[in-house]
Image (cartoon, rainbow, N blue to C red; front, side, top):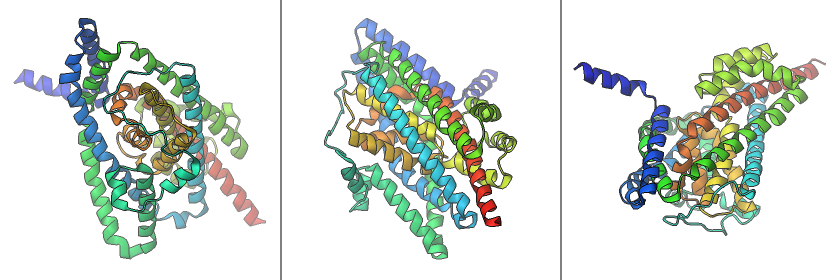
Length: 419
């Protein structure tokens, strides 16, 4: 009995990130052994199928998560008329910075890829690629608007799913009390989907172990060096975005020097880096924003909203990871496809930021939109925790920067009104 209790305690103490890390290490070991023993087919025949099952579950959950979470996010902004200018300025700030983050991620990802630092793996099973997809911006724009809602769902056309969510959520807000039944249904359905997604995410250690073992066994251990380069690429992008976008915005609109800004936000940044949770960092973020001169009423609105919709770090991660995984498949993204990545990641940031496991779900969505096999996500997901620490830190830094900027804009507006 004592042994059983001890085992149960160990299982409870082993968090999901630790389980994933352990699965990654074990998968690398098993894959390396199979590679050296000359039996890579063992992982192909008996391990990869379980990883494929996990990936199928991931594909299954992507559409309902994006649809319902985006509608739920839009409905939660039902009081936007009350907050007036604060609301639209906040959303505009976050959308603009997310779009810039996507561009930074794509530029750096292409630089690393162009330098030959991202590998091309000999993976042929399940790889499909249509180079004519989203050939230019106008094609991307037209393809965003669906002619058949159900076809968008069945084909997992993520741009169209996002547009559908925006239209449905906006229409429910406009309908007011008459849409109460629909709002309650969305809230209830989203709660169910959250629980289902939580269950699927808990299976991720199995998917990581089986897929990374297969990749290492069939491609060799050199793939691990490529993962380190992807991490380096992402963190360089995080640093560039924080320094040249967030601190510049704080300097230009709130009059704070970069040194003073980062010094004031440092405690929240460290807390976010270690906790990997924007929501858990909120009390520290509020204190930092207050000390830097933000208005309390603005901070009370902008920071919680930012924890929900501001995902610049995740946007950078998606762009870098998409280029890396495309390179692994021997694919090259066209300019039109990169525009699709920017649009998809920027719009999706509104809906899925508050969802546990959002980084992986959103990456799966972007890969689907690009026609890149979602199976490839398991190559990078094993080190997702390392990406998550940096991107959460960046997200919280952006929340504080946005709070300072909106506070400054509201003060100027009040000053002009006083005249």
